[in-house]
Image (cartoon, rainbow, N blue to C red; front, side):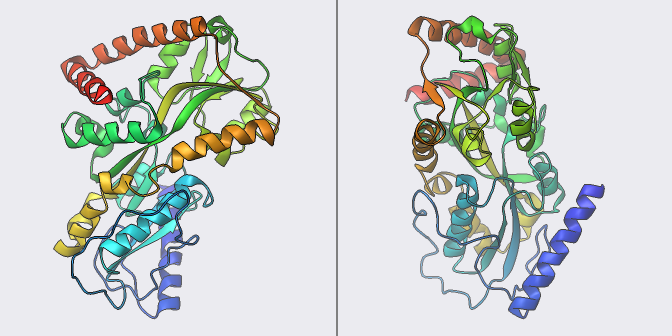
Length: 381
C-alpha cells in the first residue's frame, strides 16, 4: 500500500508538471479522456528509436489533433538508454502516429514509477496505464506463459521467438488463463535477447561443472533443469544481481545479453559467458483494461493498430543486433570470454532440458499438452 501511495504521489507530480507546461490538464493515470494540454514528446527522453524505425502509421485520412485528447502513463524499469527504454519511446511514437496525435504516451523509464516486481500490480490496479516488464518477475502468476520460456526450445532468434509468442496468443486462449492477465489487455510479447550462462570465476567446460553453482534462474523450468546437474537456481531482483555476483552470493546467472548490457554485468563482474542459446526471455507490454475501455472508439482502434504484430515491427531486429554488439563488447572492451561448449557436453544439457521440459508440460495437464504442441508446431513452421 505504501508503495502504491508513493506511486500515486509521483504520478500526481508528473500530471501537475504536464499541466503547468502545456496549459491544460492531463487525464489521470488509469484511463479517462480528459483533454491533455501538454506536448506530445514522451517524458524521460527523446522519441527517436534505437535499432530501427517504427511500423507504418495507419489512421487513414483522419485529421491530426491540435493537442492530445488523452495522456497515458507508461512505466518500464530498464534504463532510458537501453533497448527496452528506447523501444518504449518508439512505441509511444507509433501510438501518436496511429492516433493522429490524439493519444500521448508519457514514458517513464528506469523504474521511477514502479520497479521490476511492482509494474504488474501497478497496471492491474490502474496506478499506471501501460507497462512493459517481464513475466518472470512474477512467480506463479504466469505458469502457462512460462512454457514459452523453457530451456533450449529451438527458437532461431529473438525475432523468431517473438513471432511464435504472438502467434500462440492470437491463435489460442491457452495463455489467457494465467492470473497475471487479469484486468489488463496485452499489446504485445517481445522476446528478449537470448540468454547465455554467465559466471564470475568458473568457466563451464562440462555439464557437470554446474554442480554446486548458485545461478540466478528466472522461471521454474530453468530451476528444475539446473537441479539435474546439482546446480542451484534462485531468484534475484535484477538490480541486485551485480552486487550479489561480486560478493559471492551468486556464482552467476542465466540472463540475457540485454541485461548484461543494461546492468553492466560484463564490467568488472562476470568474466565467462557460455553462449549456447539456453533461453529466450520475454518482455510484455500491457495496458490497463479500464483505461482501454474508456477510450473512444477511434482511440481504441489506434491502440489496436499499434498492437500485436504491428508492435513487433517497431525496432524489429534491435534485440538480435544488441546480442551481437554486447558479445563483441564483452571480448574487446571488457576482456571477458564468450565461448561454446563441446558438442557432446551441449547434448547432455539439451537432453536434460527435454526431460525437465516434458515434466513441466505434464504438470499443466491437458492445456499444457495442447500449448506445447502449438508452440513446437509454430517453431517448426
